[in-house]
Length: 92
View 1 (cartoon, rainbow, N blue to C red):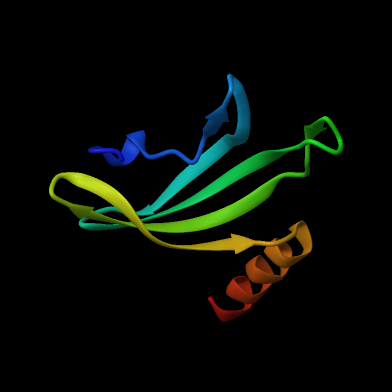
View 2: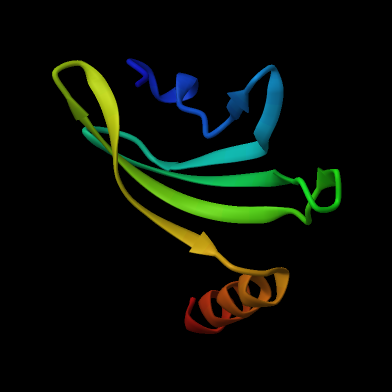
């Protein structure tokens, strides 16, 4: 795991191939509990290419000098992401 917030990533490689390609991230909160939203794409063996962009929100807790993932919420589609944005804009 990472010692610094900026070093936290969801990028994942296997056999020299990037399986989860982190495209962007935004740190939503900092501290002992940190929340980060990631934009990523995942390798699809059936397509022999990357699938559509996806989004995930992850919470990390700093323990013994390292950030460890505590929870995550995967946004399942672009449509769901747009509904979340629209709802938050309505509420705010």
